[in-house]
Image 1 (tube, rainbow, N blue to C red):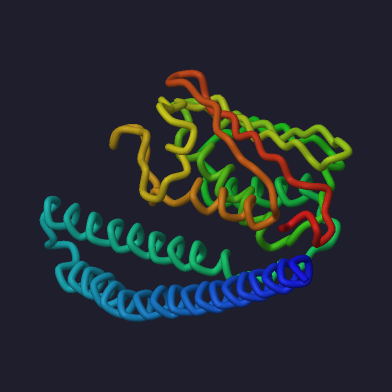
Image 2 (cartoon, helix red, strand yellow):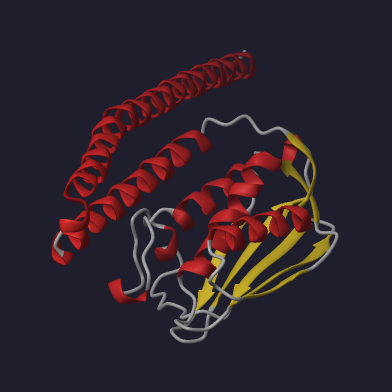
Length: 260
């Protein structure tokens, strides 16, 4: 009789635990929906005034024409640059909000091709910057192509942003294919950074460089980490001031079971 009672109590506890887990999963799903709606709402509300500010700066410059004082022209340019920077921050916030909600579309992805693609885009955007890039061929992984491209974009953008002034961008994308997945490295020979805690580079809005050493929106590595974790992987940063940075990424072999 005692064994039957123990079994019944165990079943009751298991059922209660399952119900609690289901309740928490529903609450988490609601939180994700609210987070995404909040991010999109902010984006919509901020984009309109940003566009207006940029438009007014352009119109003011046109009206003043050749009579514009050099100082005023500089102020207008700064206004436009800050509007563009704010727009980039809004885009990054939206990207970050979407990652957690994204349903992975797993398939074989050629990371070498994606890296070359991102490098070509960056060279097109910054034709004045010399580039020395090395991409190991045939780096395949099973994952979401859109998110993996976003990952490489954020990592390679940092190589551009934090390069040594007056020197070429020097970056290498390489990996070791192992039974448990792909061990990827993205290394640059830029200005580097001081890392006091392993989690520090991936914290939102964490800036580890001075204002004179280049600047980003403080979300690049945060987004990179979110993409890696969405794939069930891990990422860590290795860097020293003046010695460049290396991002070590492990992406599991693939299959839906790897994402959990």
